[in-house]
Image (cartoon, rainbow, N blue to C red; front, side, top):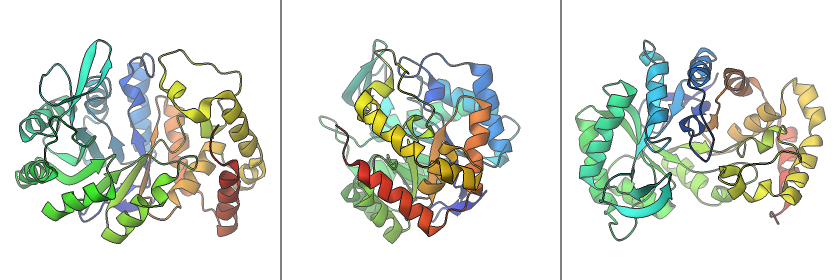
Length: 329
């Protein structure tokens, strides 16, 4: 496994990281088999993955609790990345969305950040969080200035409760504001070969300013593994229904493209998902690809993607094919 620097933090993370959004379950992902989720997390660590990304908002704390149980006795083997900024059962912050009868609100106020941090420490069973990230930017009516948020994070860092500071789902201008107050080590944007918008701004910015990127959804919720065929259907509340590439006409085009890469899979003796992940972490500016796994076999498979060395001809061919897809209908 290749390990890459997370900004100026001194931390080195595996190029493939484990994402735990789906582990939180709920209506977007369906029930979680806790025993299998624990095995998946432990299998990922055994396979060389040392970065585990989670958040309080993943299942109202369930994902953090499962991560905490899985790493018990193995704390020194992992980099724990979690987040702040989404709260529930609270009147502070700004309304964001409703889920399972609860109103989720965005808040990057110093008081809610401090409360969230203590709750995450308890759920994870640790005394320090390695990478602490703001989950979403603050919005009106409580649009806390980034300087105030950053001052709080820097104080928590000074206290030894967090090691590195990150920001998820932010713009370059917002990163400028974070960096004006202190060191920003990590940015977490959405990125896959089907959603390459950040190649125009975020990735070059992070390269220039030595900010590591933890990109999420690199397999487009499993579509880019080639295992989700045309006959697969999803219940009305599932998250995949919100992704335009899952519409039948678009899905057909993606599956046809993947079928054209069977020779590459054969040549590299890899699965389609591993091929796509290897392409992803080879892109300039991508530090870590966060990949979800609720089954141990999938966690091990994803980790092995780092063993693939794709030559420039292969990388270019895959990019040409992806670009030929154009925009989803």
